[in-house]
Length: 156
Image 1 (cartoon, rainbow, N blue to C red):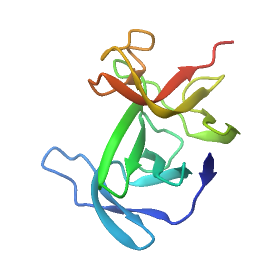
Image 2: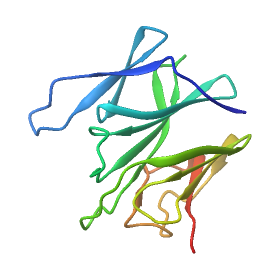
Image 3: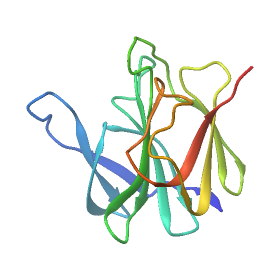
């Protein structure tokens, strides 16, 4: 079951030598050594009282180019799955809006596209092909043979 939470914050780190901004995650005022890209927490959710799902952008403005979504295991200080949404080969921007829990394991949100996205969390990791061609130029995922969530663009 997904529940919104407010006890997660990001602690921005100094920019790296390439100018990239990363943050560490603080949960219940305890800093975890989990670096994530970006400095603005758009939303945070608890899933199965075991995982934390966060939506992170660079600065929270209306001209964001990328949305980073992380599924964290705070007990192991580890990112277990992630996705980056944005037009990786062109210039498209927007803001994160209309975040809604739609079911026990599904979240709806809007970013860049007019109709939005559905993020579905799996009860158990699902086997997957390491590279998805469905949204190759919009959604970037790590090379992995199992996924903990899927992201689907809603078509008109």
